[in-house]
Length: 204
View 1: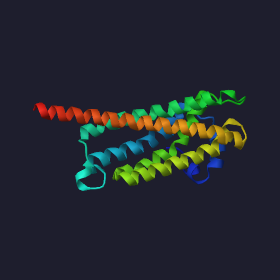
View 2: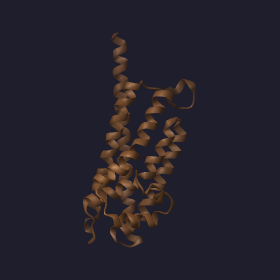
View 3: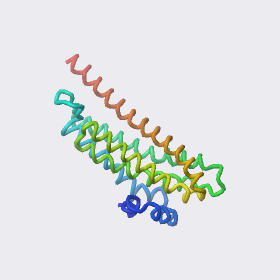
View 4: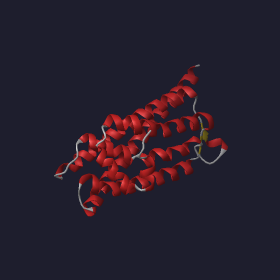
């Protein structure tokens, strides 16, 4: 498991310098950090949706899925998260094209993987999925992700804090957009399965 987790949460400025000095590969990042961290929201969501169901304010407003459906959604969700890290890293690499010290694409993916850590951790609240609690946890995760981004970008790109703030804001906007697309994908899969179940029950 990642040895940077505590540092990113406790003293991100020092931890970013340590990460930059390591020149970690993408494969090492995924094996030692992303694969483990991305599993947190997936496993917790699986438990929450199959054992408790999503609560929207009342006992009659609880949506629960079967274990086979939960596995299908979990696998799709996990694959989307892993792909999203690479996509965001590629966007960071593209946005850094005008800087002389532009990092390699692989380094940008590593950067994106560590940036997403708070959002991965916020997924633990979906183990007992109450809508407002998960929404609040998601907001906290996005806010701390933004903080990590603003802290790490100047050092990562070798630019001033003023320039770092500007490009970090753009990176954050793209990251939130990718997150929204990711959630829409999961909701779409869930909706498709629900419609299929209704049609199956109708004809049987």
